Every structure is written in structure tokens, then in C-alpha cells.
Amino acid sequence: MVHNDENSTSRKINNISEYLSLNAEKHPEKPALLYPRKVTYRELERKVNQLCFGLENSGIEAGTKTLVMVPAGIDFFVLIFALFRIGAIPVMIDPGMGIVKMVSVLEELEPEAFVGIPKAHLMRLAYNSVFAKVKTNIITGAAGFGRTRCLIKLGKDTNMKYAASLIDPDELAAIFFTSGSTGPSKGVIYTSGMLMNQIEITKTQFNISSDEIDLCTFPLLGLFAVCHGNSSVLADMDMMHPASLHPEKLIRNIREFNCTQMFGSPMVLNKLADYCLRKGLKLNSLRNIISAGAPVHRDILESFRKLISNDADIHTPYGATEALPVTDITASELQNIYSVRPENENGVCIGYPVEPLKVNIIGITDKPVESYDTAKLMLPEEIGEIVVNGPWVTPGYFKNSEASLLSRIRDNEKNETWHRMGDLGKIDTNGILWFYGRKTHRVITLQGTLFTIPCEAVFNRHPDVSRSALVGIRMDESGFIRPVICIQLKSGFHPTEKIKKELYDLGSSFPITKGISDILFIKDFPVDPRHNAKILREKLALWAEKRIK
Image 1 (cartoon, helix red, strand yellow):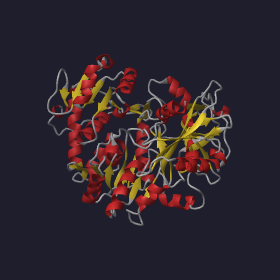
Image 2: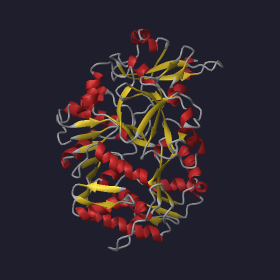
Image 3: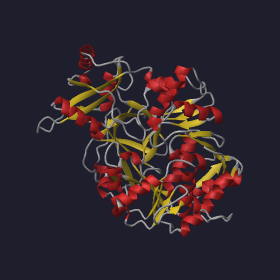
Image 4: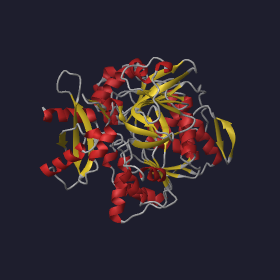
């Protein structure tokens, strides 16, 4: 991997932490982090080197699977860069999935080292057998307990540089667990080459210069911002529970530091837009906004565009933990596309494939696909499962052969592997990808198969509807599913027979929703903890089943 920058000579990058070293050499006094306190690249590089020696003395070495349960902050970034520099394998898991799911995941993982906040260590003590192979326990804060070491006391007071571990591009570099919001949580294998390709493609695809001031609302992208040589403002919010954010705090971050770019889930953008429009505020310093994690609807884009300057734009890339980004498109491009067709009734437009990634559509099946030459390739405009192949696509899942078998398709002729995204979509005649929903969320009825995105778009036309969700419930042993549309009304509106009839008439007027006769109202949808945008449809289906029967 070669890092190219207009202000520096090319240097071969072998370890992700070397991006930090390179930036510290180029501009040592430039802030790497601006908030919650200023940390220059020189200081961050020094802290990382010092912690490397301390972690090594504690028994963490190349290849050590290290579970990290530390919130985004200065300690987090120092720790992650230090683990990469040593060649240890950081393991990131979303605590929002809940204790029971976490424990189940950790039993398979068998971590060898654990770095966490005091609350996380209480979980370790409560489920001691799960952590049986952990040899090194490190705790944040000023005081430890038991046989734990304190993170702040590990940094060796030295100006020596720790030599970065040499890592093969195909070697395991990290494990990032999915949130489990659309199925069981899985440990996604990140190789060294995959990470470095992501760093490079995000910089070029999203036109990120070396002088951005980034508002970080998601830790992994904050890590990328440092690798890009930017200054990062760690958003004044709980990044693990973004729904609890106070928009005025993020707006203060943006305005105080004149942030030029930010990443935010659709929920984050929606909250900021709602607050700013009510208060008459603008966010003129932003020029580059990236939103992902769930479909970004047109009303959110239109609202947020009112806050930014005319030369700024919003990218809405599509991807997943297993492959990010897969496609990209901007709000201005979407505006042109949606101006000639109804929004989402033909799927959500998620853009053009990001080169050199390859994207195809195959026939829908819940079974493994043994080889690529046996897969049914769909024609343009035909709906199927999205499959991808490229340099930043995961090679599989950690210690989960069943999930890897279901998600991988081997192309023996070209000696490459395709990853099944588990999402449904189509590629139109212009080469643009359209998203139709998760494969596991499709509803197979006696009349045919219903897809979540286009069906929900019909009911979302009603002026009183905030959002809708299609779920299926099994009523008998026939194998077919009964479709149910769940409706969340806008604030201030309440379910009435009149609204219900209007929704029924609306659904009956479209061929794709004509067979949906069950309509339920719910105050608020259950959503994923990471982005607070993905609807937990399995949970919603159980709720609906109790009310239909």
C-alpha cells in the first residue's frame, strides 16, 4: 500500500499506525484532536509510542486478541493506534446489543486481553468463565481492582519510537462485530490491506483534503480522519447511544471549531436539521457531509441542505461493516433522480458502485451459493440479492463458518470471492443501484413476495404518517406469511378509524400493497442502538403477531 499526498513523498505503508507517524512528521504541531481537548499530532504520536511499551510489558503482543470496551475519547484513539502498532488485534463490540448477546459473542471469541471501563470489568467478573483465556486486564480510570492494570499508568515515560509491527496485507488486523440489529451479531474480519484500502478510498471518494476539521460521531471514521491528517472534533455525545444526543451540543462543536466535514446517521442529521430550522440557525462551515447506517430519506436531505452553503454537498454511501463503501451518491444527484419519479416506490437510490469495487445482483435464495458460475445473475431492473467483490470487502467472519458459508461465493475461474450483502436491490439501465430492503425482511405471501422499502413508501405518502414498517406473521402451517403494516404517526396525531381507512384505501390503490389489509398503529418503533434508524423488525413482528391473533 502506498500513501500519496500532494505535500509529501510517497512512503510504503505497512501498518495502519504509520499514517499517524507520517502525519506527525509532516505537521507535528497540527491538532489531531481538537475536542474535548487539543492534542497535536506530535503529542498523539508520543502517547501511542509510550503506550506501546506499556502494553507490551503487560503481555499484549502481536496477534493478541484484545477486546476493547472504551468509549470514544483521547484514550480510545491512543489505545487503538497502539494496538495496531504492536500488531495486536483490537476487537470492537457494540455494548448496545445487550449483556446476553455480548456474552454469547464473547464465548466464541475467547479474548486474550481486555481493556475496558470499570462497568465493563464488572461484566467480566459476573461472567468469569467467558473471560477464562484473558491474561491481561486493563481498566480505564485512576484506580484498578483485583488483578487489573490502570491504562493511564501503563504509558512509559520515554521519547523512544516503538517500531511498528510488519503486517501482511492479508493478515488479520481487527475484528469488528456487527450490531446484531438485522440478525445475530457476527465478528467481521478486517485484514490490514482491507483497512488501508478503506482509508485511501474514503479520502478520494468523499473529496477529503488534508485540512478538514472533522466532527466525529462514529469512532471508526474518527480513526480514519486522523489517518487522513485532519483535525477531529469528538462530538459532545454518547456515540454508543446517539439517540440521546443534544443537538445544541453538536451545533456548538461545529460552530466553535468551524467544522468542514462530518459523518452522521440519518437520525443525527434529522435531529440537527429539526433543531436548526426551529432556531433559525445555519451550519455554513460544513462543506462535506456523509450520512449512512440506514436509508437517508429525501425529507432529511432537503431539510439539512437548508443549513449548509450552496457549494456544500451530502454524500449518502451504502455499505455495511463487511464492505464500506459499496456505492455513493450525493444529495444533489438524488434530487435530479427523484424529481422524475416517486420516492422509494421503486426502491431507495443508493448510487453508483465505488470503483474498483464490483457489484452484481443474483437470484434470491436463503441457501448457500457454492460457486459463482452457478449463481443466477439478474438482468438490469430485476430485483435480487446484492453481491460485492473488491479490495475493502471482508474475507469472512471470525469463528463463524456457518455465516461465512452463507455470505461467501467463490469464483474459481477468476480466483476471487464475492460477498453476499444480505440486502435486496436492483441495478438500473444506468448502472445505479437501488435498495429494496433486507433479504430476511421480505414477506412471502400466497400472492407473491413483498419488499419492505417500496411497500412502506406507499403508506408513507399519507400526510399524518411519520414512518411505516412492513412485517410478516405466520398464521398457519401453509408456509406463507401474512403481511402487516405498522404505522407510526407524526407527533401530535393519534390513531383514528378515519386515518386507518385512508391508509387502507391508499394501500389498495397500488398493486404492490393491494394485498395488505392489516394495519396496526404503534407509538414508536424499536430501533438499533448504533444508528437509531434501522427498525428491529423481528421484535416488531412479535408485537404485531400478538395483536393480530
